[in-house]
Length: 201
Image: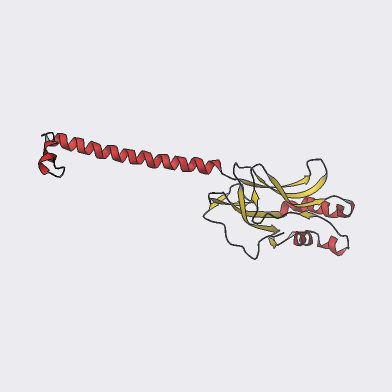
C-alpha cells in the first residue's frame, strides 16, 4: 500500500468531521502541553544547578582574632555553597579611593606616620582570587604590637569609615556586586574590567 496514497489517508479518518477535528486538536494540545512541561523542567533544572554552585560573599571587620588577640582586620567570607570568583575590588576611606594598604594607613593615620612611628601589617590579595565555600580571608590585618598600638587604636575606630566593593561571579558566570554600605547585593550582567581606582595589594 502506498503511504502517499490519498485514499489511504482518507480511510484512516473516522468519517465524522467533528471527531477528526477533536482528535487532531487534542493531539496538538497534548504536544503543546508536553513542550511547556519540558521547558518548565529545563528551567527548574537550571535553577537547581545555579543554586548548587551559588556563592555569597560577606564583608566584615573585627578588632580581635579567633584566639583573642587584639587585631584590626578587614575580612571577606564566602557564606554560599559554591566557589566565588573575585574579579574586582575597590576600597574607599571617607570617600577617598585607596589602591593598597599603605594608602589606607597614610589616609587614616597621617599624623602618626609623620611622627616617625613605623607600623607593620599583613595583607592578602583578593583580586582574581577563587574563594571556596565557608572560607574566610583577611585581606588586611594590623596587630596591637607595641609599635602598632597607636595605629591599632586609630584604626579600631576608623575601620567603620572603610567601604568595600567587590564584584564576583559563580562558576556558571552569574555575577553580583557586594557593597559594604548596603545589606542587599546587586546582580550584574558581568563584572567590570580592571579600573584605575581598584584596590590591589
